[in-house]
Image 1: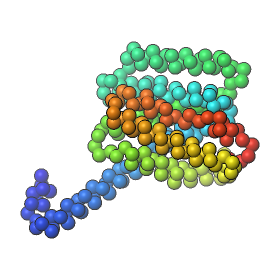
Image 2: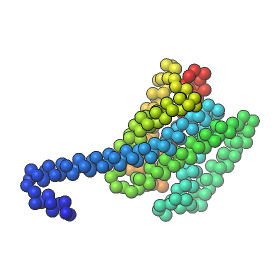
Image 3: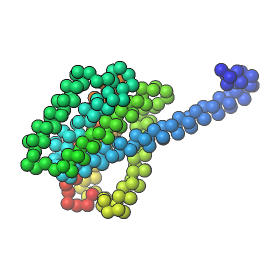
Image 4: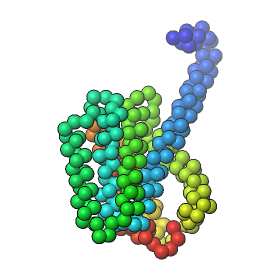
Length: 243
């Protein structure tokens, strides 16, 4: 009200300049906020993708995808522990869903007991946990509904991952954990296809589902955004050539 009263006392030209200045300041503040949130969201997002691809080195794509699908159970459990609204609380149906997920993991573990690799299992489960954390953080900000531009935030998260975490990859390469080498030329088309149909398409569909449905539904649709790579990704991860 005070700012509106001040603008009313100014001349027309001065009020226009003051309004433009206020809009620029608001836009700058919104940009800084989106950057801060993107840095926060990029941490579990990057770790989730990294651990998923690490699990592909030690197990098949189908097994890794089944393990990472437990992100739904993690999201339900963590959402119930840190419930913000009554719909987040644990219910009988959610309990059944978590128990069925756990039973599926037991069946998978028994069926693959002769060739199980704990590195792959722990990496895939860690990927699911980090992705669930990413979803819950994103949902918390969306629920606030105070000026969050969802498509912009998703794009900024991608930019932060590209700029900041590539530097982290250089550190891992310098430490000898990862090899600093470009993928083979024959794999570039598959990498570009995965990048186009993965985060870009699935995040866009998730945001659209957020608009047309309620919060209790879109988090389950978002689970489709878990890196669900096909045999080409498995070939990439298991390739003898430097990646």
